[in-house]
Image (cartoon, rainbow, N blue to C red):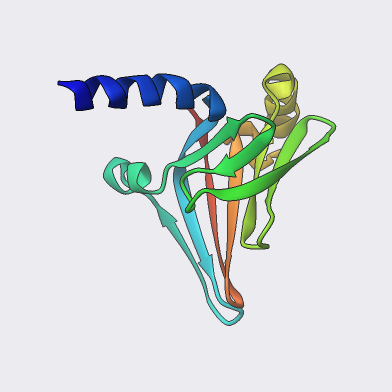
Length: 139
């Protein structure tokens, strides 16, 4: 009993030392494109596969993390209607249409036949000299 009380007290004291994790973005891909210089393989993802490749970005204090990719730290860069989260280790990025710009970007994308008409984000992973790109919608 004393041990349990000590653990509870320790947790209560320690919890303010750790920042609160806030989910900044969650997206589910619909298309996966694998490329390797000499080959390009597009794949429409089933719902089951898409959930496995879900993209999640979280914020703890003033730092951002690619939670769905081994918690790699990200650096956000805002430009126009988009925010791009770059992995500090060079493994890729996630580009998202800003919520306040979504309606206008989608309208312009539809007129031009661009992917912005259909998708809310792109996630690009670098694997050696190969790459995998996911296009999807935010949740």
